[in-house]
Image (cartoon, rainbow, N blue to C red):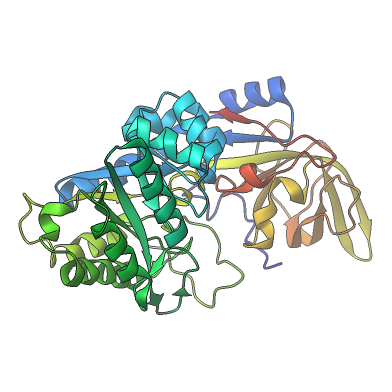
Length: 404
């Protein structure tokens, strides 16, 4: 694994400062024990408000749809819902969760490659924006509209080959007949109206130019294939993909995440070429998940024992790789704290940090690390995106989440 720097508090400016919230953290850990995810509400709210302000400054009507799949526990907390976020869901299960949490149907965006007929009927009744993924789904929803003798407004997901990213497997391709066939199908069925165009970049897309390309492709498609598109389109949905401040993913050659303003201005400046009258602009939807949650959530584990073997410090903690599975995607940022939650400092030595499962490959970190002892805490930073949702009850229960 690529080792992070482990010198006290350096390099942690984007993440929760647990020593500044010492009393709250200490009381929480006494009550819950470890392992546990801790969520800094202030960071999540600050991220949301920065995005909201940038959208307000650059586009007339806009919606932030929180990507439920990124962290269900954040969705259940209501933090972003109280700030005004809509719910972006990609399955019937997530859709029902959004309704249970009190989201009105008209504040839910339903994406994803599989929606059952039951899901479609529920979404239609509730007035949800459904973005259709493929021709089969389009034909099923048209059959539903005809059989129920109702009119349905829908969106379609579009895709194309983008530099560095390739061509997504999702959506109607704009590079062959898929997207055109979808438009022809919709035009032949008066019970269905197209009101939204949707596209979505890969997660952790740090190059702002990719957002320009994506917005340009959608704008060109609308301009050339939709008559009177400034009037007919209610929504342009540019999805998510916005990066957080993690170390460089292992699959990337370069890594340079920008402030959210850079990505939003790139998108809006591009779309303004196609929607010249700001009073006739569709509502711009963005669907962040990682950007909102990744940096503000840490996993806290505790060191069970320490031994030295072959010139290395071998640490065993009460967490596991299954609790932070994205360690395989991106190097871990881990710091050690004493049992009274003070940064552990001093000499660094070659170290391996293992979890407590019976898997030989349950390894959370390898590299230089401060010398530690049993009872110390380990703080795993940038842990808020996907880790909790992907964590199974394997040997140990998946950790819960607490607000600090």
